[in-house]
Length: 124
Image 1 (cartoon, helix red, strand yellow):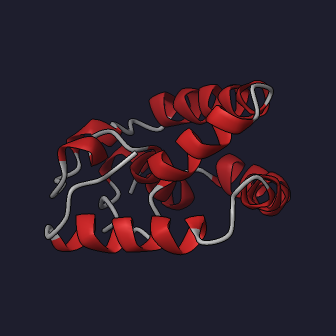
Image 2: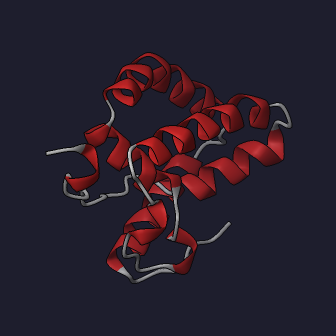
């Protein structure tokens, strides 16, 4: 089975990426310089592996095309992504989480749970 025909994984959101990233971007202008090159690399790998994050069914309009969908498929379809994510992912999460105020990570988890259940509307 080639990468393009592998099943699309079901995405279980643990926290709202959009909520967290908006917070980090608002507080630290330089965070874009760290995150955006990583996103470009993910998009290139997604393209090479036939991944389109916009095809996932979502309960919330703001979730459409979320990087979480692309990341979930890359975890399944790209050994290169898995290797880099294993090396970079933990440090990136620590950096991102260090920029958040107390209570924002639980808020991101709540927003994701509501969006996943279709009971809430994402807030920025």
